Length: 268
Image 1 (cartoon, helix red, strand yellow):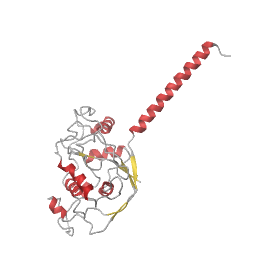
Image 2 (cartoon, one colour):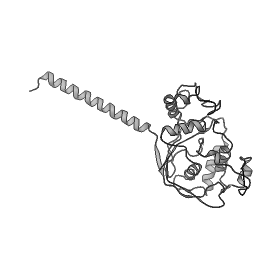
Image 3 (tube, one colour):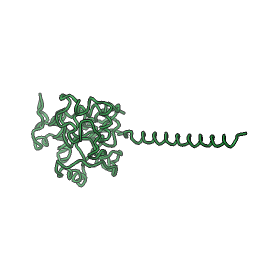
Image 4 (spheres, helix red, strand yellow):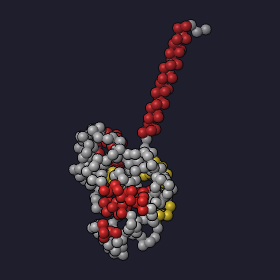
């Protein structure tokens, strides 16, 4: 028979165990909530805006991050991988604008919004981050496939009102700070902020060469003007996509633009 003292010790141990258990559950919950969220994209036949002589392209099923990578997430990445900090990254992999908005080379981005998309990131740094998640940057066709969707339709590009809403972002001054990511109004796949927030790197950005005549043979030229590119694009009315192609066709892998971020993808 237990004495009152043993009962007290037993009750104390039970409370301690319960407290520790609750703490472990909370930590596990935080770890799950902090984990990047990917959703499955079914893929399918798709009419790309790039010149294909009228043929559709096939996008295989894949997984895509629901949000771009945030300042907070990239800060955690460079703490684990110091070689990607601003004071350590080789100039071969990034120009002098790399993480230019951050308070210092090693600090967390506490002086601005940690939940905003990370920008001023080179293609090399973006690729390294995605590799750390056992992922990669999405291909252009993958990005374009998801970006064509609205909240109810897998392809809303024929809707003038939808196109006009997207184009309104391009009217904002380029020097405006990037706001925090919104989790409202996901598209039909459950993906957020494909438009009206940042530009995004794609894996094959340097393959988006557009010439005045898609029948041209030999070495293709980089995009010279939006008007010239429009002559060969498959969807000339989609000005927002034209602007994306124009930008991605004009940058190099070590460039870091104030409004250029990224999200990651995984094979199905």
